[in-house]
Length: 71
Ligand SMILES: [Fe+2]
Image 1 (cartoon, rainbow, N blue to C red):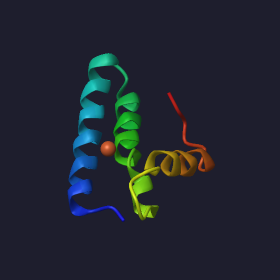
Image 2: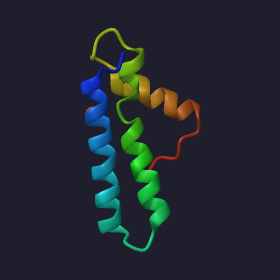
Image 3: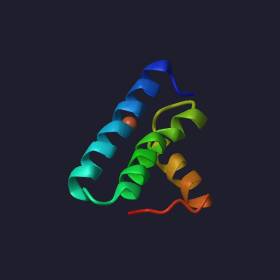
C-alpha cells in the first residue's frame, strides 16, 4: 500500500517531471502534462505489493494493460 510519505514523493517526482518536460520541450504543454501523469503513476505498483521488490514490474504491467503511451 502507498504510504503518506510515498504520496509526497510521487507528487514531488511528478512536479519535477513537469519542470524538466517544460525545459526539454518548452512549446509542448501536452508533453509536460503527459510527463506529470507519468510521474504520478511511476510508483503505483506499491499499492499492490506486500514487499517493495518488484513494484516497477507490477506498475509497468498495469500501465501496459491500460495502453499507457511510453516515451
Ligand atoms: Fe519513486
